[in-house]
Picture (cartoon, one colour):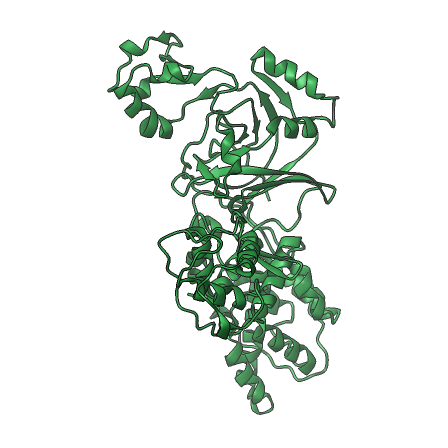
Length: 529
């Protein structure tokens, strides 16, 4: 597939541009001939195949000279079993007509030639649909979101299926088409774990208008304790619970908070209560939505990469399958979301300038300038006209703010901080330092205007630049002290995966994060419609 090359715009944190995705023709290799055995097979009327309006299906049966192929009971039974238990992989058995296929199978010996042909086509069509969903998901992210830049995944399902069919290795095909990433595997494990919890938790919604701290007495604690018992963060019996916030409950709350990415301080505030109020069914839906998203992502991760989990506010540097650095990050707010991107890191910029982008100009700068013409001067921002001439704030035309360029000089208090990392994308976003360094101590770090801010970025820069030249701390410090904008090409190839997932498992424990962009429920609903 042709790679898309995006124009990198050197400004910060603008709202995403809408672009019509290019339609790339998918080249497929003609599938091999299907090896048929002596079991019962009949000729299929091509009208039955054409009724599905599927080129893939036509090509499949061309390989069998339009004869039925599923005469082998063992093969049929295996496929029916997979489709019936597809919910174990987060899929919906109804999408693959599982019940209809089982009805055909029960009367297989009495089917006439026409019905046998229909059954055969249905088996092929639905099994290929199942495999396609496992490989690249049921839904197309490009049709759902304007700010998701993911390479289109192509899948030659006929070749995969026919090769497995001919070699009698259908049992290997399901594993081969799924993601090999640890996160995807941990999501499948999370689905398995959550299915072990009782179906009906029978716990009322927890309501408390005030924070609850150790040794407090609060009627909400009865249901809080029931939730902690249900999710196994606390042991004990539900018939001996009190309204007192005791030490045992305090420790259980901290454990629960840690599993949900909250400040594990034992203080029960709205964030903790919100997480406690999720039911088993809601959490299961969340896991299924995350499985779908992971099927959209690339199946072949690069040798070296940055992977950012937006809801977890985290960046991991992975080199040769080893995590070499972990950083806290700040991401975009729900109104100015950090886009989903797969790209390649290109350049480190020390002492960057910052050009105020249109969104921030309109929503923040112009209102502030109308109140105080010295607003930009205090932030070390210079106004330039279209000829590049500096403009005095006193003569700035507030009615035509778009006729100017607003540039902040390099420095410790620059909005981008002391460093940024550039990568190709058409959202005008990048990774960078920040002048709000206290943000990294917060548990909720959905605070930026779209770009990703990195904690301790100069250490990160030194790490990724050291592959080509000895980039010592003192060398970087000298560049920073010069306050001169300096661009350094990143010689070592790093992919960037800026992705979104809110659930996984680790050591048989369920882990969840707040769905900061409200994507999970909407995605699950679309999956089941």
